[in-house]
Image: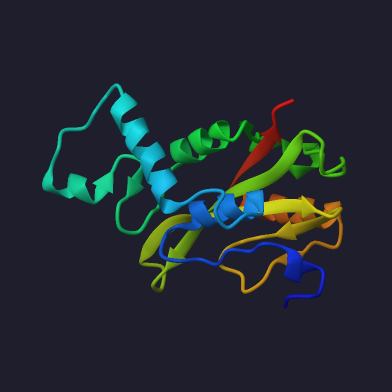
Length: 183
């Protein structure tokens, strides 16, 4: 449920499999920080730079190495390239350390911009397995879950609740990526 505080938080909702696009826009708190076109461009550039180019098939029109042309479903390579284009650095969190090793208590302008999670999901009675991108961001001194599948951003009570959430996600196959500001 949106409150007065989080009604000012930018929160893009899920469409098709464009969760990476929504997660990036939620991270940057702008509806056009990235577009389908800009992410497709990054994916195409990555495909051209790929040393082991796959042989073309009729399916290549839809199913490209770094995304699906119709539904999105961008991969980690597109994420990293997109964030590097914006002067950010991505650090893959070592899941063996748990969330307690992540500094969530620093100021917003500190090194950590936000957290992206890549979590397993099952749809259609468990017949379809996929993964979903989720953004966590500290805004105005408060941590928010900006998952595009949520109706509205969810507020975390404190940094310890964020750590509990991250540990739960890690325990259920989630991958944690720290988005760092380059200083």
